[in-house]
Figure 1 (tube, helix red, strand yellow):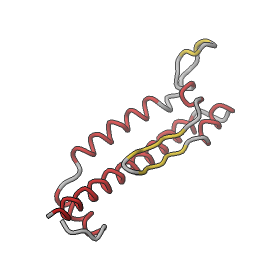
Figure 2 (cartoon, rainbow, N blue to C red):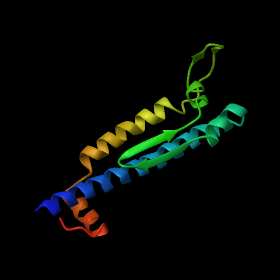
Figure 3 (cartoon, helix red, strand yellow):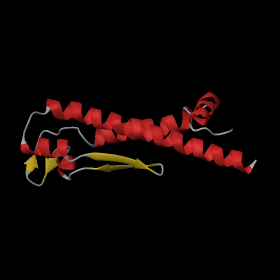
Length: 122
């Protein structure tokens, strides 16, 4: 019986990590869409090429240049600017997706399918 509960923990961990990988990919693609419409300048290119995502131990780590936060602001210390919604809107929108999917999508059928993929007994 102890082995089965341990297997459920492994299945849940794999499930959460799959969601995080999918949402990291979705974030990256959503940011690419916004950045491609913004044109080519030094700030945009720095933001475009300095992003990275990694998933390990049920954690999603997003790394980016600080410039990504500044091009998302309406006002900086240098005055007003037209914001490029590349950070807050996208990150927090996908954060809500992660929470929702984590609460809803792990059904018994999916749990059984993942156990087969991981060669575990439920």
